[in-house]
Length: 213
Image (cartoon, rainbow, N blue to C red; front, side, top):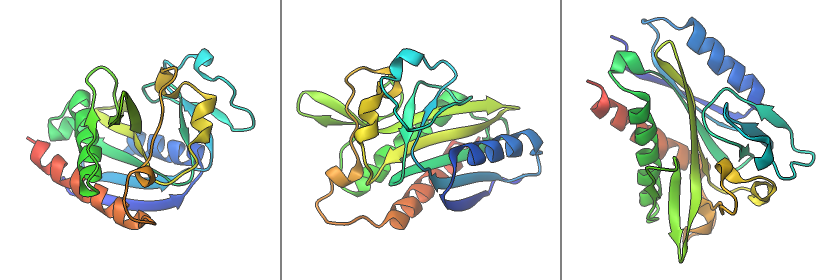
């Protein structure tokens, strides 16, 4: 059974192009195809989930808005944000979608712990958060789609980016939600983006290995 995982580092890629490639892979993959993890950054774009409400787009301006087929509400992607797309045959691994969401959330929590940042997930609001005095700032957002027992789309983690476009929306459908990023919390200057990618991939691989029944 092909339970190993192919990892693809895609660099900066157009959102719609990657989305179409994910969809095509999911539609045509067979039981003999290995699972894949894609790591990518996107040029500035707002994406709406399937249940996304237009009133959460406050003032998108010149940034494109794309209606996606993932779960969740509106979010922003831009350079300096790490987006991970796990193309996983959940049925083959004996996993459910909620289990996959939790796996990704905990992978982000462990990634941040590597940098001595305490983070946590919320049962009622998917994603990963960092407590800041009297509020919880969001650092990672999730939105999956499952087709033919296989998941695609995934999780974005803010690393070192321009966060101001998040002010033009209600992130993930929450008015007043503040977004944060890794570079606001680390004690050293400069972040090795490739190191962050490698750490996250290793965490996800280990967790998938444990979760597979």
